[in-house]
Length: 194
Ligand SMILES: [Zn+2]
Image (cartoon, rainbow, N blue to C red; front, top):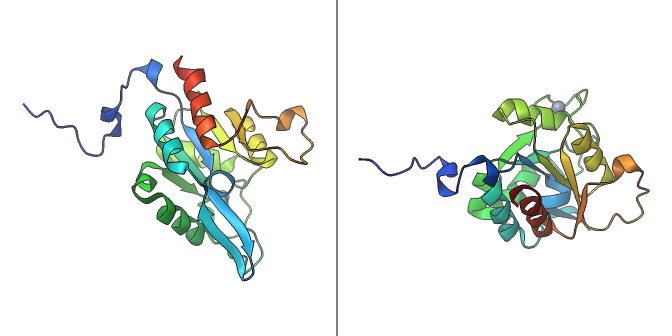
């Protein structure tokens, strides 16, 4: 009898009964995973601190971790090209990068689509591309535009970090405010697995 699980089947590593899994968890690349600083010669891109434990924690409860890659700014030479941002993520995460579903705008450079925050086109693209369940998901981001995008897509929303000077109306207010991604991961566990 062959008892080895197929290498690609991650669900074999953890319990798969419905009560122990949550819906897809969507992470905003630019505000949650990357740390982007304005350097003297343009933006310097790295990853946020302590991502490894948080992503580990989320993958214990979610079958799908989706990274939403917003289209880069429209102006030329902004230094935030999609390939450059993804390369920074790949370097910063190492093997963990392979666990993530990377979703980027498939519509070209015309910018006539609704992928970018605060629209939620990128979430719809994710659902279609990976046949994700429409219900029970979470959006994690660190700005008001992201929260609007997640909420309008029917997701529960978590905002990282202080809201700062944002004037939050009810529509901008997340379901939960987290200190960091690990706190967000713990909240998702608490809400859906207890
Ligand atoms: Zn698009």
